[in-house]
Amino acid sequence: MHAINGVRDPAAGFPLDTAADDAGERRQANRAVAVSAAGLALTGLVELVIALLSGSVALLGDALHNLSDVSTSALVFVGFRASRKVPTERYPYGYERAEDLAGIGVALVIWGSAVVAGFESVTKLLRHGGTGYVGWGIAAAVVGVAGNQLVARYKLVVGKRIRSATMVADAKHSWLDALSSAGAVLGLIGVALGWGWADAVAGIVVTGFICHVGWEVTADIAHRLLDGVDPDIITTAEAVAASVPGVTHAHAGPDGPAGPCAWKWKGS
Image (cartoon, rainbow, N blue to C red; front, side, top):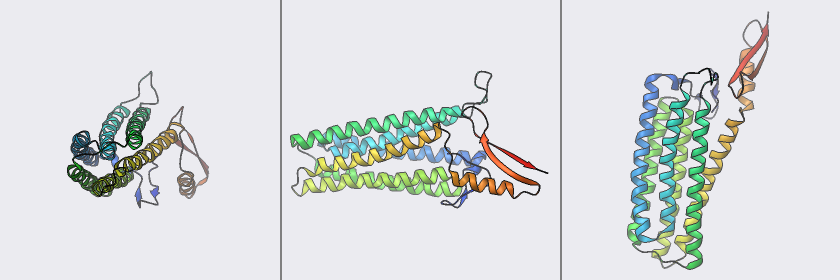
């Protein structure tokens, strides 16, 4: 995400991650990521064990979805730490692209989860596979819904406290994950009612959720790799810069190869 100091995010209502440079707020952000990852790991492992015992592909897809979120959090954290290394002679523009390399890994994990979940769901639908331990499966999926809702709420509170648009957006992502778990619940309830095909169909729906997230992540990474910037933010920032007394023209341009935006202005 490209952040420009002093420009407010119209959707979130606060500066775009400008406060995240504060050491105390970074610690809060890191703690939120760690707590969220631990919660999702526990939820995903419970779902995975029950999915393997019951043969529920909907629950399997949701477990993979939650566990992929944990792995992506780890990749993002590693990329974030690496990107903060000071520039060197070999890399004079710094290591900011390390976050994008981590993002590629994130996308691969998500798409890999989608392939596994989709394959298992379609195979079960075509072969009319059965589902056991339905009660346990429903309970595990309900845990998935609750776990994602708690994680979403926690990240939303912390994100607003430290004024991080990124964390607020991630909280909304966790809320979407709760809908994925709800799909698994509905599929297993369908099986309990005698609709044997419901679990496989729910698995395909959950796969769709995973693909949706994968597409969003891939599009965001492509946007960053191509140094994309929101035109509205640039327009607003240029207007703010041009309003400074003595400045007659402001223009945003690249600071270097694959580098951040630099501001140039003319004035008396």
